[in-house]
Image (cartoon, rainbow, N blue to C red):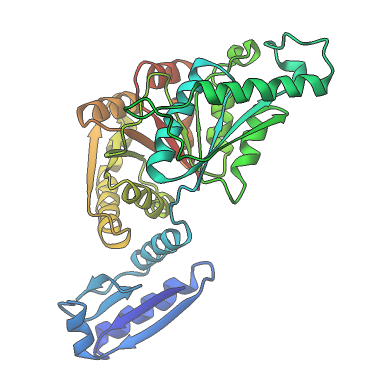
Length: 371
């Protein structure tokens, strides 16, 4: 439910704002709206509104002494809808493992994250006997092989549990285990669609030689197809909190819908959000348009998403990935975030050589948010 209020005195500008609002609502998918027109000066004073007409959504002043255009109102409504529909919560984290050093690092990273947020962990191992080149029990019946996998998973979970400073295991975190038969990429994507799954934390390579032939194939598939946020963890990464979160932006209009999701994630950790756009040579002609997008994004970040700690940055670089990494290192970024809407950027990220540089030559985790 969106509560929309127009504050005014029935003047020409107030009527123009109402007309634009109704047109904007008519052009968007249907959702529940309660619309009010308010002329009471005391209510305007209570909300510290400096001038009429003003537009207030869910008790937040979006515009005052201004007549927003239909397009501007649509952007605001979309961002509010995305924000209210997708609150970021961390109650259960899925950790796919393959018994490798990389997955052990991801599991330990997830334990620290879950401990801070009070989330539960489900550690999952997916195998397919016909393609599991690490299977030393090819002659064993499938039931026996499944039992062996469960034993290996249980030992893995116990042997890689984190301890606190005094050496005691972090027992506060609820950890469950599950063994699944199938192809890893497909099963992980299926798990991501569960209503109980809030996030997936995983490494980026498999222990199987078959997977190593197509470097990062599971990671790439999960990154683009999963239905929840996925954090990819380099082997040397240690979770120390998310104080500085970078969102790699390409400024398309549709991306504005993600601002609420990204903002809620940053607020969950009381983090500063770096909204970074890398300008390439192909964008020089559209520089004015990009600057207009930047202004609109800044308005949405502060007024709509309610983000107080943010930095809006536009910079040039011959390479998007190198530009992001350079900025991240300079500003001590803890997490880089991208959207699945940025298809070309994702393809660059998960290209073999780029992935190796970005996720293995640094200790910088990458989170992919799915629209």
